[in-house]
Image (cartoon, rainbow, N blue to C red; front, side):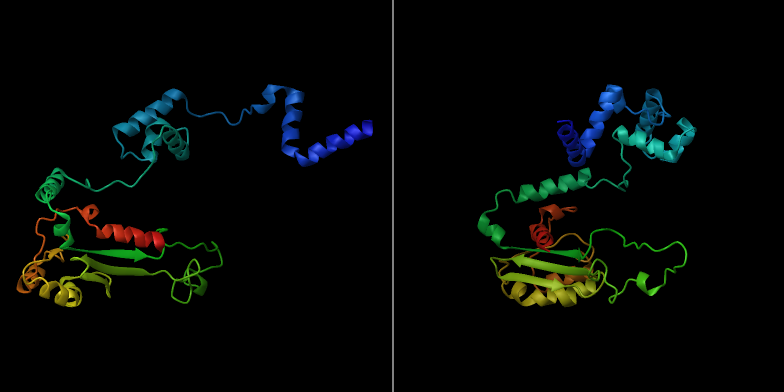
Length: 273
């Protein structure tokens, strides 16, 4: 009988080792066995509150500055941990507000002017936009190599077409899209240069849709929409559009990419790719 009990106990220890260990220490030392003292906390609640209030008063104070002023006896990592526990996380600051009052006013003017447009009128609009697709969204590429005995210019640490990253080479693809006009215009153009300038926009993009946009627009049936990029609003571009009798939507607001229906197509392409 004792041997059977002993075998059952050994079986439990083998199948549930973590549960048996917890049960053993609670039985031997009581509930206090589950409480660990650990390293004593170097800051108290008052100091933590002072760190929080100082950071809220001046959000641009670094953890090093806060540590020197309020907690010189503890490490900078401790200051970061206390701020994180208070709900403050270090982030990259924005340079300017995304939408100013002027931007909001121009959006209102544009939307109000088209409030009573019918579906057939919207079908006449030809929407356009450009976008950049990247093969990876993990930020700047980094490489791990030994501290000693390695060189950053060794073949295995170089990034080129014959040394793929994550199983394939990285690439950046710039494309321009236009669609609309009752389905008469649907074009996707790959931009064959790092950045698009006015000459490229006129000679390679606008010229590619000149036939569809201009011939069908003799009676200003179609309305060409483009954002307020400097390439689109340059003197050369405006002159080309005017000479080719293109009816342009001139009241498109600044900072209005989310109002462009092409953005929905870009989002769907990103999800599928």
